[in-house]
Length: 605
Ligand code: ADP
Image 1 (cartoon, rainbow, N blue to C red):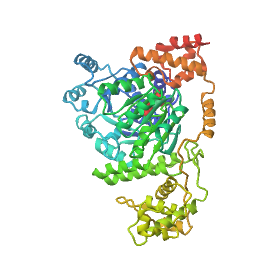
Image 2: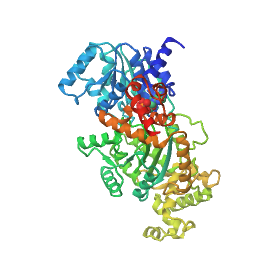
Image 3: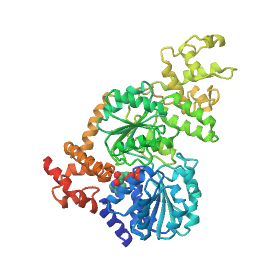
Image 4: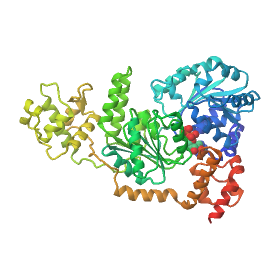
């Protein structure tokens, strides 16, 4: 092993208590110890922070980390300090005196990592301060915020090219979890990175199980999810503030403790909700997408979408918050055509209409098509999905009820679309469903569609069923829908289907997460997942962790992650030597917590 590598592994063990790197980490760390700009795309939970914290530790000078949310900087810094690395943040939440002390420590070159907001970095005083000390490199966290093509676009990120202008000789390293090719190029260009080393990891989150279910009685659907995840942490995302208020209220009335979070609340109320969730005082948060960026709670076990987000990027980002500890986590999407209409209404108003509509169609297809959901997500971000089945989505787990005679169903619907259209402009899904079901309406009568041979050929099927089939036929490119008038027409592939040359894959609408089979599976899953771990001891350790976190006013994960507590509950360490071998225990944490947790193990037995 080269000296550089030896140093890297020694630091990994000493500060983090880990023996090995997660995929792409070693490569990224190695590239950052050199002198070249870089861009790293690594999924949430992939361990991006370590990728820049470790080289910052090894290199001379101070690293400057640009992070979008002031409210999270304290937690991030507490976490690093907990491992014994000198770090601090500088922002408007500090008093004048506190700022003065931080600046003094920076001037004395006592700090390895400094966290700043993009606005803070652009302040003249800060630029001068940074110019007067040795810098190892700059890190731009959540770098996708720089791009109009991405999501969470932030105006203040746009000016970050000023780093290269002011600090020409210092390397800049950009990090993000989700970036399509376009966003990657945009980041490189906007930051004016010079010949950057680009590290792109796999985007697949293999520990997440995805399900997409048509929305119907959403409160009941949410309650079903909560029943599967008692005592586990989860986020329930809603599209509108009023939905957040109403769902949160209704859950409370049903005896489910939860917090709510949206931009219409006061700063203070939002801060309290976020703290309660991060500090594990509450397990459930009902929120709009205003909640979540940089949420570091690593044991979020489920994400519910009570409405469909506007793009796959958003979905990936929001579901990405689950299972950062690599343990299994579950994503439930309850979607409806109304969500599509809502987002297309917003797209109409936007100057980026085409881009927004393409993204909207992609997420709607993700929801409505019966196909491996991991594969769709991975392909969307331009990567291949090697496996034939993920075993971790409703499609691959065989939870979807497939339509047996899909070709015939497809042909019935397509011939109806073809016939009602005739010489006309065409008709929407509602009328097509009426004709297929043999329903007399004013429109049917006026157009004399009761005389068509397709009238009533699906009279035993519900509207929901037929419309669900139509959505899937659109998604599989057998039908196209006029964006303005929502009228349907056949595509070339549709004509092939009518001739029986190709067949669609159609699933019946499923309105609930399958109970029987999944409940059994979920008990098995839980048993397998817990293995040797003493669950009672784990809960006792968790309580202690909450107590310590609240004493120190830090989030629980700053003390230990769930993975560490699980390892303690399995190995039951009796001595400091035993404790040093626990996952995630570095030198500093050994000093701070070994005695406390060894005592709990001893008292428990
Ligand atoms: P990201 O910022 O990419 O979402 P984090 O930096 O929050 O990811 O890391 C996710 C989790 O993975 C954290 O709990 C972290 O402690 C853990 N982790 C990071 N690197 C390693 C490693 N080499 N071995 C084990 N766990 C790791």
